Amino acid sequence: MTEVKKYEEITILETSDVHGNVLPIHYANNQEFQVGLAKIATLIRRERESGKPTLWIDNGDLIQGTPLAYHSARFGGNRIHPMVKALNELNVDASIFGNHEFNYGREVLDQVVKNSNFPWLSANILNEEGEPVFGKPWLIKELPSGIRVGILGLTTAFIPRWENPAHIEGINFADPVEVAKKWVAFLKNEKRADLVVVSYHGGLERDLETGEPIEALTGENQGWQLCEEIPDIDVLLTGHQHRLITGVGPNNTTIIQPGSQGTHLGKITICLEKTVDGWLVKEKTPELTSIEGTVADPEVLSLVEPYEEAVQEWLDQPIGKIEGDMRVTDPMAIRLKANPLIQFFNHVQMDASNAPISNTALFDNHAPGLGSNVTVRDVVANYIYPNTLRVLRLTGQDIKDALERSADYFRLDEKGSPVVNPEFLFPKPEHYNYDMWTGIDYQLDISRPPGQRVVNLRYKGEALAMDGEYEVVMNNYRAGGGGGYEMFVDRPVIKDVPTEVSELILDYILKHKVVEAKVDHNWTVVVDGERV
View: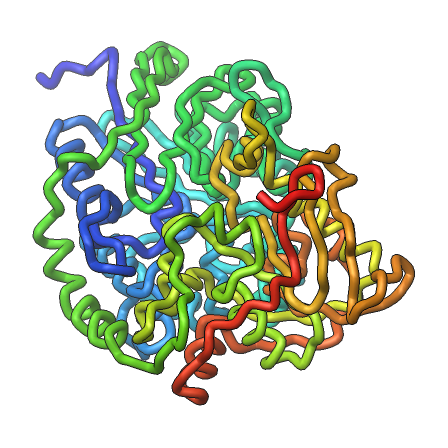
């Protein structure tokens, strides 16, 4: 006679924001880099070998973020996307739609969903009739013990603020909190879930310990609100912010977030007790495991090898030359005064759009810049997002407000030297939210109070008119107000340039063969009027 267990221990695993990383390399130079699904796979197999019932959920932003992912989406034809192929091989239980799943358009996304041997969940991505666009919003997994685990997928509703409208035509991103209230009750009461897991591609808007806001409460990240307003959520898997989080939120909800790029595997161990009323959750323990020192899974390496060979050949194609120096040796120096790399990117945007003013960013501190001989690898290593361009009609006041937002990137240390404002570093690095402009002249005096730092703002030699109107080109993320640039929301759109910026840069270099490194010295950061 089989003994009925009184206690059962199960494991919930989470990956999130893997962003197309499989191999533990950095594509800018192919050097070893502690990222990727190949190493995560080793940790997942190890957890499954423990014998405990184990569920693994990927929380989104899976198919975009590396040259491997880009090349597969753009040139892979009908081949299965390598990230999907890896998740199929590893038998993931479910995946959630992240905001970057939409970057390549519906045709690519529909193919990804079609080729997946696992369900994609999101309860709040709805069609015009209010029904889920991509199938079921939830999943019930019944374990051998009889425990029923309800899994609900949710996605940040902020996607329309960033995404190319053509990629999300006919799709409504409903409020995840309101949607979750309905479906959590359904899973608990009608589907008799003993354990309710909500996997939300969004983050936490408040500090877990204090409950104080850690960002403007815009609605982009609603993890705290989900826990506070829906007490029946046992586990909340989060992402989007690229943070490392383990803890307990309102209503004793266990919360985890495993960073990004596959550097960590999230794990929650849950102990349940069998009672006359069913299985009751007794204990929940969240933890994060780093991939440091982990050997990459050979099967995952083998299945992506054909894709990797194709992308490496593509990356090494020479496309032109730079006359001068556009390399990045000091990211902070790049952000302190006008430089040829950023001016070149702005010039490409202006050339493609015919706009007289442009802004762009140095997206992260890993950008290598451009050396004398330029390959495809060099371009995609610097311009890492599949952004398109949009030309907005802005007032002079809008431009000044945007520059003040950028100026807030800086603080002064005890020696009076510029450092990065912690708000741009935590809860995740946001170097991409500091913009540099071409087509106007300005100074940012960071010794002045925030909101009063923009000085000597001019256009074509004259003071920028605050009530004047100007056409400005920027990427679609920024044009939608992404990164705290609310002054751009609902401004008139003069033109959309649907070609991705990285492709525009490639085409420009291919056309001109040799690009001169120029700098107009149109802007600088100063302290008390003196350059730093």
